Image (cartoon, rainbow over all chains, first blue to last red; front, side, top):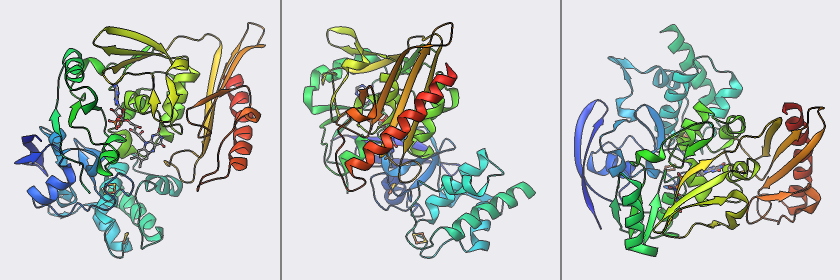
Amino acid sequence: MSEHQVELMVNGKPRRATVEGRQTLADALRVELELTGTHVGCEHGVCGSCTVLVDGAPVRSCLMLAVQANGRSVTTVEGLAHGANMHPVRQGFYECHSFQCGFCTPGIVMTTAAFLAGNPSPTEHEVRESLAGNLCRCTGYQSIVEGVQRAAELMREG
Amino acid sequence: MRPAPFDYVAPTTIEEVVALLAEHGEDAKIVAGGQSLIPMMALRLARPAVLVDIGGVDSLQHVGPGSIGAGVTQATLEREAPHPLLAEVLPLIAHPAIRNRGTIGGSIAHADPAAELPAVALLCDAELVARGPAGERVIAAVDFFESYLTTALAPDEVLTEIRFPTHHRTGFAFREVSRRHGDFALVGAGARVTVDRAGDVVDQRLVFIGVGSTPVIAEDASELEPSDDVHATAAYRKHVAGVLARDVLLTARSRA
Ligand SMILES: Cc1cc2nc3c(=O)[nH]c(=O)nc-3n(C[C@H](O)[C@H](O)[C@H](O)COP(=O)(O)OP(=O)(O)OC[C@H]3O[C@@H](n4cnc5c(N)ncnc54)[C@H](O)[C@@H]3O)c2cc1C
Ligand code: FES
Ligand code: FES
């Protein structure tokens, strides 16, 4: 069993941790770095609740080892701000009440932030497709689709 | 749910990868994107004692029209689409967050019978280049997929490169049916059609996924012998395979 020193940028700040080889990035974020905003549901890649950005691109943090994130830059839901204000995705979700229990929310927010960065004016169909990899057991998705569309509007307004 | 403990090693050259596999034998496992292996380790269906991460091996990262390094991510291939068939197929694989990590070599070496990239390898007559203790060998795609999650690769071999031969006056097409976009396909079909100068078809190939223990080359869907599972009946799969086959043949023909 190997142990590793990892150094990574998390939400813009340099962080270090000692991790076991088998520790996932999700685990390291939550346990070693105490960033519990990243939720862990299925732990095998299916639900999307653990989605974070690594070097700006969304990944399942339960399917990446913490040691593989060494030297990389990680953004979690805690780091998703817009200056002093809420990030437009969080604002859009807040306005449209895009959650009930909130368990899926951090993963959906991170997935949506990356999706809208690449597609600022999506159709409703594209929004639904973008959510296909994230499971929500509560909302029925309608309010999430509305939240993503509102977020896109807010981002276009700047 | 945690993987069983293992030693993690991250070599930077292919020679080191081969040496590590030779040293640890069946106890070692390569990890590329981890998008199939880490779930299996979390569920303890795989418990390697040594995990050899090939993500830091630069020589596996090239992308060109005739050759793609095994370590290239599915997201990179989607962006650069060095082959027209890849542009059509990549968006069907899982979700962006998975394609950002998952690799072409990992998908082909994993050999899920419902996966798209093994079918692409068969449609394109790709050559799969493997490195082991005895050096390099080239395996034709038609000889590569042996059974469910089982390939011609030996445990001490690493897939390094996928070569795509050039096909003239040839069109390709791929379509699949899945429950939701990004789920593994219930059934998929791909076609390759070559025409002569007069525009008459001189060669064609059909490949089906989700209908057997490997991707299947067949003359038409009536030859297939899919099985029932919780997602769909065999009869449904066979019917859909026939509909998709007709569609991809016509599309490939129009692109030739
Ligand atoms: C929710 C979900 C949905 C998915 N949906 C689809 C889908 O619709 N279609 C699809 O095709 N796939 C799908 N996948 C699988 C995904 O495409 C994987 O990325 C791919 O199957 C494996 O690639 P990888 O690089 O992640 O390989 P890994 O998981 O790292 O490795 C897989 C296997 O291949 C071996 N291996 C990897 N690279 C090499 C190499 N260079 N040489 C020798 N052996 C090697 C490993 O030892 C391991 O046994 C899905 C995955 C998830 C989690
Ligand atoms: S916890 Fe990672 S995808 Fe479900
Ligand atoms: S709000 Fe409960 S899972 Fe989505």
